[in-house]
Image (cartoon, rainbow, N blue to C red):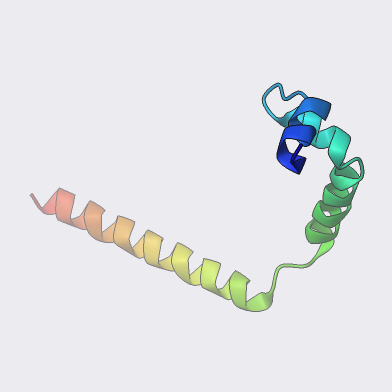
Length: 72
């Protein structure tokens, strides 16, 4: 019997989740730990600057549209 057939007999899948959880018991804990570490990281200054530039550009585009609409 090949591994795939043997595996599918051991872990019946219902939407794939229970079988996978049984095969990888520590995955959810590792994912939670990784996600927590990402949450604790600061946002890089360069990214904040890019977001600010985007906000300025969006405000300018909104003002330009409003001016064009009132000129009609």
